[in-house]
Length: 394
Image 1: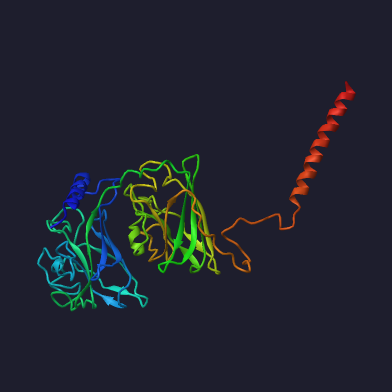
Image 2: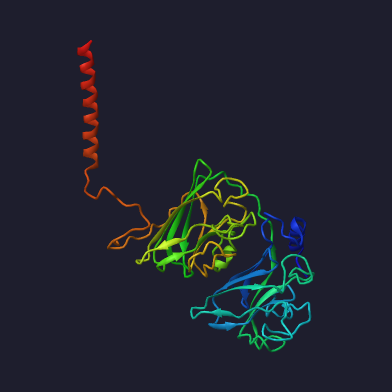
């Protein structure tokens, strides 16, 4: 059975919108933390209810054997090892198992999760078999739901579980509460964040400055990243561990669609793309009016904080939910006040062009101080001559 605290949060979710998605309201979400049989935290999962009735499923894990693994929504929200307590696949319509089974699929069936050789993997998928909101296929029925990762690949045909073998990780799904009031912090004039890769390597930093007109200046500097354009966004939780999935989805307190060029958007967390040069260094210097460092409904300092995520590919600025910007390659938790983070190392030889910087049109050897002094002397001398002439003419 679900914990009493989870029922309270779910009740708040129901009172705030029920099964319909209110215009301008944040999309209902569920999240869970994957743990292995030893109780170690190895990843996260987020389910987001979309306006069209579908659910976006996003999982990120580490420390698992390479290869394809079955992953399913299970019928009971209980992950007591060895994870049998999660019950069978979630299957309220009594179907057979498998996305390729003509008599299927279970409501809990999903594509396989691929784990790369280094032991990390992500799955972003869309399902119409379940809902986060109330209904006959809600994941928040009386005994809740869990997401289970299996030892082997799911063949997507064989009942009851696609020959996906034992259970190696489990996450209980919990409702995500509506945006919380700002944390007990005074209004901030600046913020900082340090970008790290999934192996903990520092690859840059971000500085945020609150402007007097209400906008926020965002300066991002990175190094050691793949050349090209990369999507970069504010994400809804101030967490980057155990995987970057802990940051949740894009920061979107107004329930908009994704993309700076989307007529139904953008998310509050949307930003222009970050350009990385051939030497691995890059910068983004931009201003946004979609978030604030001050107190208010759009603050990055709400109760659960905010993170910045850099993605593997360019953001097309139109496609919901993330502009086809692919996986997450760097993450930074936003902290109040400018942080003493390391500056990106400069390459030994500067590239011929610096698209991330303004050109120096004066050249490196222009004697600016001397020219300024001469200019002031000329102006002062001219004023003296004019005054002396006026005195003589009186």
